[in-house]
Length: 91
Ligand code: F3S
Image (cartoon, rainbow, N blue to C red; front, side, top):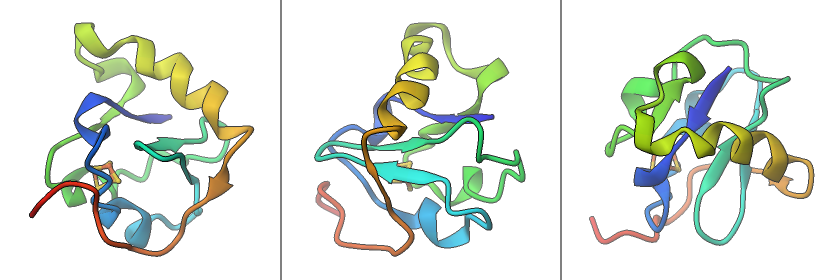
């Protein structure tokens, strides 16, 4: 699976959701998460993120390892996001 990490926090550019073929992004107030059982590792979202927040779980930088479990845990309680919206970050 792929994982959304720290750079997304407070950003939420949401370019990633538009290209996802399986609609596996979930959203809370601060960032997005990828559902590990729904992600098919197509990697379409990886180059779309302007802040490079998305990594394969095997390539998550050391400081952000906790995001692997966080993505899995958060998704169950959140709504799917499939359309781009205004980012939190200033562009
Ligand atoms: Fe976040 Fe990047 Fe998507 S900032 S919402 S992972 S495009």
